[in-house]
Image 1 (cartoon, rainbow, N blue to C red):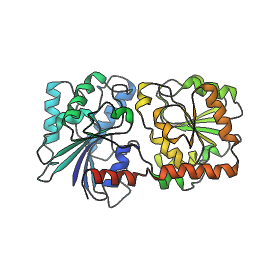
Image 2: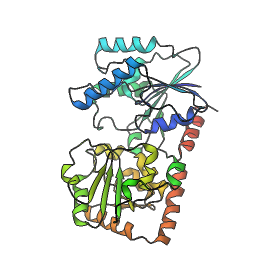
Image 3: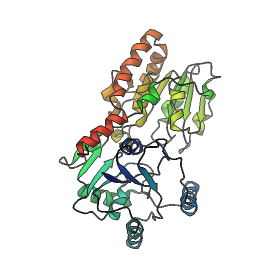
Image 4: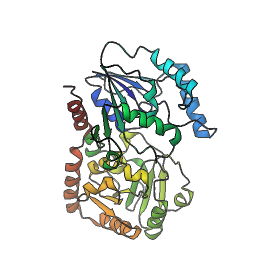
Length: 374
């Protein structure tokens, strides 16, 4: 079977779509279309850098990221000069021409896997083709998305899709019941469960480390993290990721350290060795709809997890310490640190049992069965 996938830039960050298609590419031809965007660019530095990055990729005709490590992969990624003004008729006509002049479509049936709703108008659907909408976020609440532009295109995608995969029950409730299936995020179990050497950034810290990785964005509870840092100076809080929002006040504290985003395969060298993994999220529409990739990665490491209370963690309450208030969160961090070595062995096994049932191999098999790929 041949897939044409509309996702983010290939290997720009370890998204669920990329994990899934690394598995499916072992036995199916994959045409991956690098991000066509879900918001119009502005004159902000981040947007200017991204435009330059795209132009460089097009002009030099080089892959902007490393090739797949799997020599047997049948995936090829493509960067097209698609313009991000998807609500403009002339731009849409130009973009359709750009996409359809490429020899992506032949006589073979195609499954269009769409993670980016703005791609829907590019597709000339034939009776032999199918459309799968993979909905990983509530785009009406997702930061960094042009909601007015994306909303009508997502409605069109929902209407045309043969199957809709969602990552959470919240998203499922927003979709037509006869089309929707739950496909929660998975985990590279071997990467996060097998013991790795400790990251050098941890080697000189002589106190318990409370760790988080992911972008430092609006969905992180800065007030909670600040309270934890101020009330527990005997702990070191380590935050790994790109800084999107202003975290200056928090990062100025002596017992809070920041490490810029690291490559995905290096994350386990941190999370396996710090004392507690945390999910300190605010309660908003985006978090209520989410299924964080890092949750199952944290589980696979066996490191105790403390989380605020949101839908995605509740099924794992036997393995995750869930808190309903700031004080309860801090108390659970204290408890996680106090767990004895003997208790940690049991804790690790419980978490691993949850995680291994959600490997990306398992997710790819689920998709193959449900799409009849054999």
